[in-house]
View 1 (cartoon, rainbow over the protein chains, first blue to last red):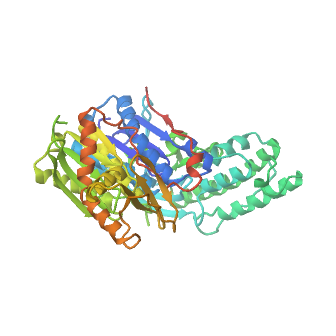
View 2 (tube, rainbow over the protein chains, first blue to last red):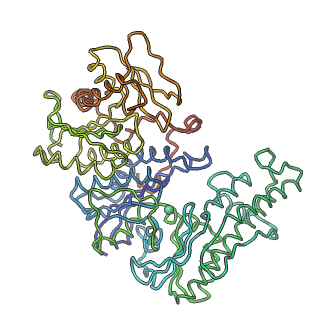
View 3 (cartoon, each protein chain N blue to C red):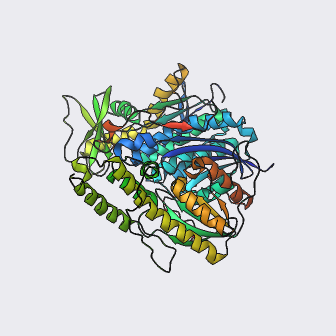
Length: 355
Length: 228
Ligand SMILES: [Zn+2]
């Protein structure tokens, strides 16, 4: 490979990421400062705190990325940055930092949609990883995170047709909510996955919101049902129904409930993804977003894709959660397509991927 | 970086954004301000480029950067400090963060003929921030007025119609001299080799949601993916 080297900056939510990516695929460095521990005491992201942490960490993360890749700005061909969607205050830090770096070093600036970054994580190769085939078109990408849940069709690079999206909450939000209900803390995703792995019985069935005849998804009903199911499990164990009134469920019960909830989310996501892939004649499926780090979801979709001869691409968990490398991967395609941003580039908190 | 080169001054804490070029000895060479509203992100870098071009100063000819750190509007402070940090990093400039509140107090005191002054600025829709020389800024909840000490005069910035006329007038006078006050404080520090750590420079936040500040662990951030 000997394509352009991109410096890529991501700051749309609560991770500060800077990466160096060659030719849209090969990662030379991918440094992320995660604020998960910072936001844990408040049980969710406080936007003012997130923006301040981005300002605090962006320079050390940049320095660490340059040192890890062993390059200087002279080696960099372009600067890519997430300009939306995301938290306005968080986006502003990365955008203005990247914009000014590009200007001061005389490099082109490439604006990248955070959501296409999650899709393009599927193209990345870690340092030292053997070359492998790029995801084949046409493909279906499922992006699932704390902020986003959607299915998109791609027939070529940068060509997106939205197949379906959540009509209410993102899947990751439901994980956080149920994580709290079960006393597993924040963030809910990894904690629920871990608890579910230890479940012995698999007979606590949570409802599925199928929304027939559409690829749209819904998780708010599942959240409501989870509250009811957990409350009943608590009263069955002689605890107050409301988890905020104290008392904790026994670990095996928590594990069963975590499994039941996770199984509902995985079942709906996997079924709709496979159905969409079959409908468009997809040769590939790409998974992205923080919830794509969930082992049960990965295993289920991988198994069903393999049975149908569809190539399955799931980045390793560290590339599914927010990071700069995915912005570098998408940025390279935009650079090749001639996309540039001027000095007036501003945050687009509600930027859509496709209409 | 050009040692002894002009110092770039940036402040985005008030509704009037400021960019200026100056020197420790000669004071402000040129200051420009404009009503930024919430559009700092679209305008700041372009305004800096214009100023440097019009003054014939290439970016590499700068000698340092001074940036106002608030208190003030979140949007503006993020844009201003992110921009200042990237300039300092790219051009290897020493950076000095100066509290916008202190600079406005210094400028306000001069405008009030040396009287002791207290500064009020808006914080959100109804609260205000009260700053006094040498004291930490604090929040005045909506409806409470600052209790002035004997002989003290009030400087009100961005509070047109929400503060007494003479305080608003002093605020205008102070803001007109904000670039000079920031330059005086920042240039002195840069000349003394007292630059800020580029990584640790952050805005002054006095308006975090109630109850949140006390809960937050300092620097609870995990950095992964590096080799060192
Ligand atoms: Zn994301």
